[in-house]
Length: 296
Image 1 (cartoon, helix red, strand yellow):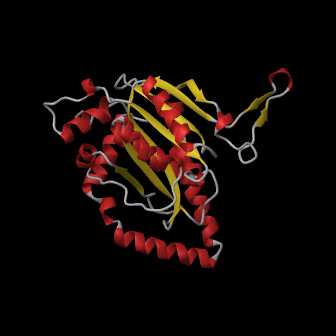
Image 2 (image 1 turned 60 degrees about the horizontal axis):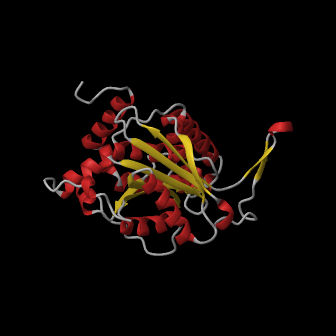
């Protein structure tokens, strides 16, 4: 698979080309339930984005070769003549952004059980057929993070131009990986620009859903794309989740103490989150969601 040479402009440097890619490319945003999806946060983010942009299903990947149906069983849905089987697989949906008029492609489904290389090849073939140049893979993991503080989200990429533009680096993780890690490694060799976006879910609240982590992932993707992403009820759900967890934590003295220790560590190491630059970035995202530019 060859990258379209017309996509690159020899007059631009790596950083300028990265800006062009993130703001103009057809982008695929992908997440998979299972090992890569603590608290359902990653698939929650992609489902929210698909709803906001009004994406319509344009393709799917047949699950027969890739899914163990004893692990991810089909679901019987509906009653009477509307009764049907819903098979666990991967759906690809697409819409045109009303802001930039570029295509937003969303893929979400279950992490495959078998033939990961073949699955990745099929997904990339579908992505190429819709003109995708940039892939954002989204994941969530359990971490030592307090529920009462902003959810940490990490972005990594092997693309030097995007690294310079975003001020980020390549992933330093070594160890077992999931399907998003496989896609992150294989897709660049096929000519795609790939960004990995990972959020941390408090490990003492692992159950789904985790709307605060979902909201944090949506905010980071919004920042990367420069596209306003309507929140709907997501922020209210995140606040209700945080309040509910706080109430439960305070009812158990050991958990309450543990949370306070996590808060102290986080407050001591994450002060840059309150910097003027971070506040300005949040305000710019707020204006974009309201259909205004930061200069208005």
